[in-house]
Image 1 (cartoon, rainbow, N blue to C red):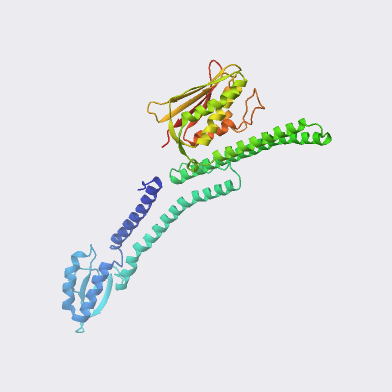
Image 2: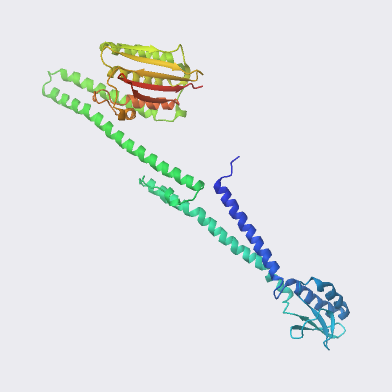
Length: 421
């Protein structure tokens, strides 16, 4: 069941108030109208008495006035003969409204009232007054509600049109003033969407610029090597240069495809039950060969197992990129430590990879997870996509990744993964 919202209560109270005021106004008009000329009750008694006298005689009309005399709310009706003698009802001055009535037997009498009682048909317009007033009041309230609801929607539509045209700096919430309801919440969401779209477009343009730059460098070197090889076919070392640059382009394209894949939605992730500790052991064993070139070691300290439902390929790329990055930047003859610790409940795992390298500038601890962000010490090492892939892969598994500098030197990357059923 949907909980009534602020906008719901505003509309409910507005409609209820309009209905109540219309009813009260109509009731007031009916009550006040009974004391004005043309009161339907006075007219009914007056003309009914006339018809009774005309059809049945004066004697039949006299009791009718006597019965209704006390129910006319102060109004008076008198029945007089031709000599001006009061026959029934209450006294009414002779200069007031007089109506000549001829009885069935030919006798002539006069009916007097303080004012013109109208006609039998006169009570129709009197009853129509509440309907007219109700119609006018309903129209006014409807106009106000329509304006109250439509004008913010018009601004929202204009803002969305501007965003669709690429003007992502459009903001609509400030226009709403101090209004507080679901429409303002919608305006805030639209402003947030415009901001997010601007960030995504800027990131996409930056990414395309970086990709074109990364591809241009190896292609330029390949073109130069091919030119030299065409000039001197005996320079076979150029073939090795072409092969290395081709491999570099192939690796770049593979990492870009992986990055594009991890940009997907979590529900599109293919998962399987996997022992994360076993996956870490395989990565550490492979990284030991690369670390041996620098006379370094990679040590793993982890519990026996941590089984979770994960995407093995993406998680492998995540841990591999972080571990290889640590091996690349640690000083020679040092140790890269991979420590995995499960919490007391056993529903999450924290993996911390630390090196003994130069660390990272404090202001770059967040930006190192952006695409094409590389270390200052080795700007030509890799493509700067490894940590970006790792971050998105961890987020797809509902976890988080962070980096911090160690007091004794080196960088520590912590990866928190929840156990997934």
